Image (cartoon, rainbow, N blue to C red; front, side, top):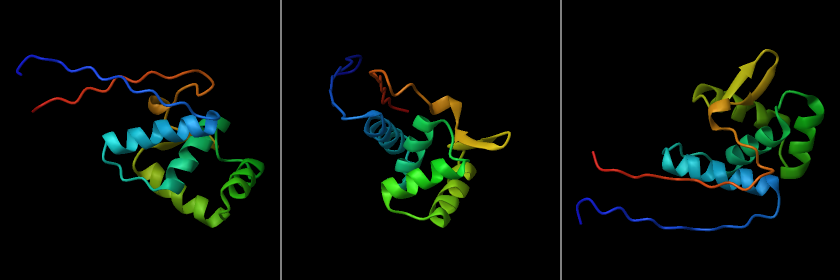
Amino acid sequence: MEGIILVQKLRKKENDVFSLAERYYTILSAINDLHLTEREIQLIAFTAVKGNISYANIREEFCNKHNTSSATINNIISKLKKIGVLIKDGTKVKVNPVIILDFNKNISLEIKLTHG
């Protein structure tokens, strides 16, 4: 089977931009062995959709949506900044632009798994 390329198409429909973003970051976590928790993925997705996680009203919205605390958010932000998923841009904490997409549009991913 050397030289043969297998193409497999999968399709997944999501209900809203947050669900689409969560699905995308779940795939990124799995492919890159990041071992992100569900709550971490939720925070990344929420931050990507909202643009940042710096303002009190945005943090409060996340806490209400996911039944969590501000202290938990701070711990997650610290971890995600260490691994480069979140960055500080001036006074705002944002998702690293390298891994951000427009979740208001359909997304097609091409994943290549190679030997060596």
